Every structure is written in C-alpha cells, then in structure tokens.
Length: 122
Image 1 (cartoon, rainbow, N blue to C red):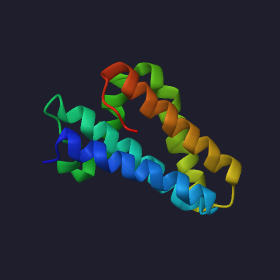
Image 2: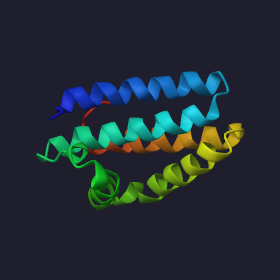
Image 3: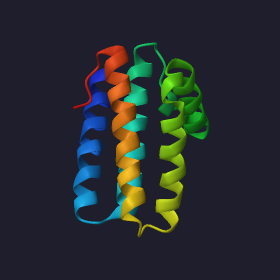
Image 4: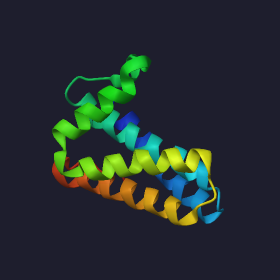
C-alpha cells in the first residue's frame, strides 16, 4: 500500500517530467506523465480516507475518476479535459497546443487539490 507521502512524491516527479518532455516536444509522453501525475495525486489524497485504488487494477481508473468527481466536483471539467486530450495525444502525438492544454489541466487539478486539502504537489 502506498502512503500519502509516497504517492505525493511520485505525483511531483511525474508532473516535473511532463514539463521536461513538453520542452523536448515529446507530446505523447506529456499526456502519459500528466495523467500519471494526477492519478498519483488522487492515490495520495484517497489514502487519507484509507482508499488504495491501485490495488484493484481493473477498476482503478473508473474508481479514481468517480472518487475525484465526488470529492472535487469543481474540477470535473478539467478531469474530463485531461483524459480526453490525453487520448488524442496518445494516438496523434504531434499537437503541441493540445499538450499545453494537458499541462494546464494537470496544473489546475493539482492546484485545486492543494487548495482544498493543503497537501502540496510542488
């Protein structure tokens, strides 16, 4: 089981790497890392409630999305935008503008988590 600190550290590492890959114009990687950064942040915050979605890989994605939309409904649109843009980057991968929007959505989500919980992802 991952702890708050473990998942928080992984989220920060993946977030920082997403920005580095953007600078290198590796846009499909930006999408992957941004999603993983947010997933790790969700795991970190859910661990405070005793939840560990990663222990059930088949349902982890759906469970994370459901949990985050329930706990942070104000971020729902950004969550949808992140996952939608990620899908497009994963298959097309040449769109720097879309990659920039992925980074923006990731930052809004992580900042929203920080503001509401006080848990830092920077």
